[in-house]
Image 1 (cartoon, rainbow, N blue to C red):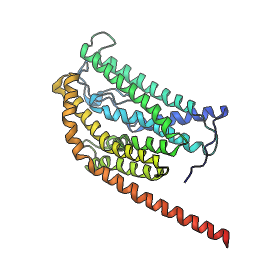
Image 2 (cartoon, rainbow, N blue to C red; image 1 turned 90 degrees about the vertical axis):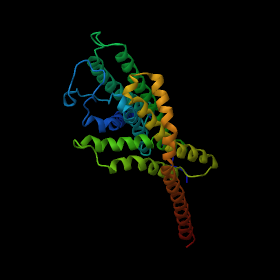
Image 3 (spheres, helix red, strand yellow; image 1 turned 135 degrees about the horizontal axis):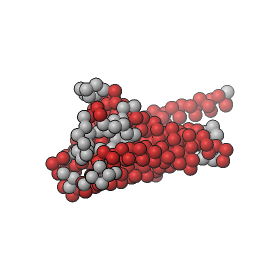
Length: 309
């Protein structure tokens, strides 16, 4: 089934496109913005209670690294999907949308890292080498996430269904993190319900399965999208878990090499536990594709019968 052509971009629609990009980036950060006090910092210059930590637009903490990545990345994905939908009705330029995403991320990063630098003592020179290394690492990770958000915007806004569906599939695991963050934002002192962890575990598989149904299997080259998407729902959660484990090892005291080794040690065991979501994604994709083909054939028969009658 071919997609209807998307309208070409026009200069008169650059401002709405900029707004779409900015709105997508804000939506990506929204689960954090509703209750975004800075997480406690191991290297904070002054002793501060959790409720007294300043408000920031990004979750800057090694313990929140995968969440930070997910919130920033999804801003580009959401904007790309919005651009794709908007193009069906009128011309929408992609580059203003990309600028809107980038500007929101720049503002959020500037505000958050200024707060972090002050708290670490880097503004007045009282911070040590570890504080500077931590600051640089968080900043570097944020820049990488912002760049990948632009890639997500480009992929999900493409006219090609194969490229767009692959972009959605690759963002499935971050989307699970994004949804779980909504529950955590409004949870009480006891934290979110136990069922929330199950949502984060299974939801990416559902997203990947639906994306593959939309992608289809023809032409045969789209099977490569299937392979990459199914691999992502197995590997990406393991990568997220391994990175979180390595960064969360306080006993390593910021030793990057030791953190990397700790992450590599836990990675195989996590991979061994992540096969179930892959099975669910395959089931959804296969069953959904069969149903889609059957519905398409039935619609074609009904259309032929209406013409001949």
